Image: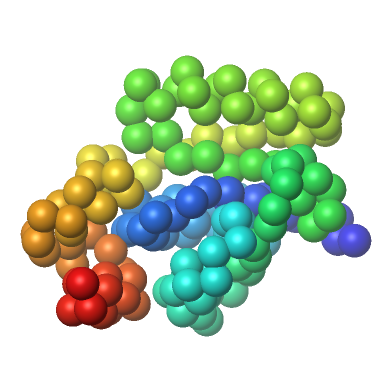
Length: 155
């Protein structure tokens, strides 16, 4: 098990991974030498995220099932990273951080804000734009856009 101070876990559904997520990951790497991007077992998303982050030193991509605090303990991390776009995100994220700390007293949450150019990005809104045939290429990394285009072609 690695030193717990060196790793942070960035959990999410990343449906889809967008440029705001990547910005949070790069910001986290200025604080933590190791960032584990963690999502529930979704093989296509795991593959895409690995492709998007290939070659970025200090980043790992992993899937998990069960409680996040169990995943933290299994990876030797104790810090959870969460992105905050607006004050409206705070109440839900704060509640999650309190639950995690209640489940494992050593769990800490670090909230990071994205660069202003990415504050408006939301996976939910990107999915909606895509569902209505809109162009999302300026919101997502190229591998994600390629996958979305492939899915659109087979619909």
